Image (cartoon, rainbow, N blue to C red; front, side, top):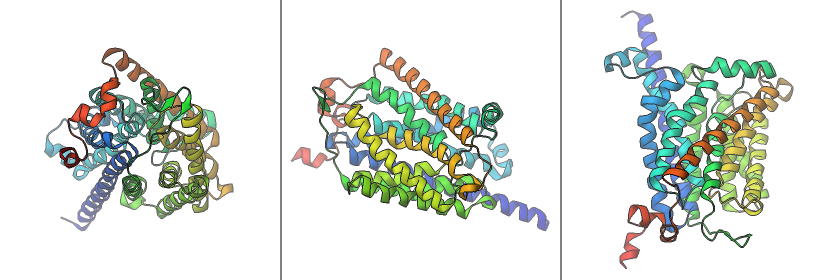
Length: 406
């Protein structure tokens, strides 16, 4: 083997390792989703939260392998293993693994909004539909095989393509807005709103909530930095922007949320969500501001959603993922301009159009799937099951079996 072949093989192997490590980091984020939900719901719903995240992940893995990834990128894995490895040492396989971690965020996001009163099997089916068909279709328009269709339209509107480096819109906005129809069709938890007045339901475990936020924050560096795809494209700007957006979210939430630990830990996530779209474009100080504004959107959006609109979105996935993800797409079209210290090459109109297009697509998909399920198999536990709690009603065990024995 000559030196050139050896160098090419080493580079290919390094790219495979680079993306695989990123995939593992994003995979770990799903533990963060689980602990965030477990800490926020009541004790009688903790087992259900853990099981939902793991089973959603498992179903997403096989459906995205067989349907979703081929739909989004036109690459099928229904070939002999020798052929799969021949394609740059299996790079497409780890690319599937990496992008699966993005796709599986959709049911994980929805899970937080519908917690404590949704039937298990219909929701598992809904998550499978989104990962196999709805998400990959939109993914194909922004990043994949049908990119020229959507991006050509966006470019004709704003003069530049829609830019979403790591999924503020494609992943988070889409997941948050898909969750809204599910939350509305399900209705509020029993006792959440009484005679038109808000009756907040206490969360169960602040340390678990905080642990979920920390796991997500650490794993998110894989989500953002490893979106480069190949090691030669890695960007220090992305890493630092990601860091500053997170702390911007924390500090703004500290003030706006008046020291509330739920707002502070979710404020970090708001900043991380918002920076994904433009982390490769913005100046670090603009990233800090972007994360801070996202945190304010979450804090005040959560209060409006819960207390004024009386929408029982348990983890606040609409303001956190939906609104902050949409803001992230738009922010890339503001702070990405060179006049504001960015890298340039973006258009505010293009970012606005792409972000609003995702909202429309998500709402249509969510309403269609959940309306059909609600009219056929039903999506809500009955009153007795909800009172008992999904842990006992669905899984026949609660989170603290020893206490039950005592």
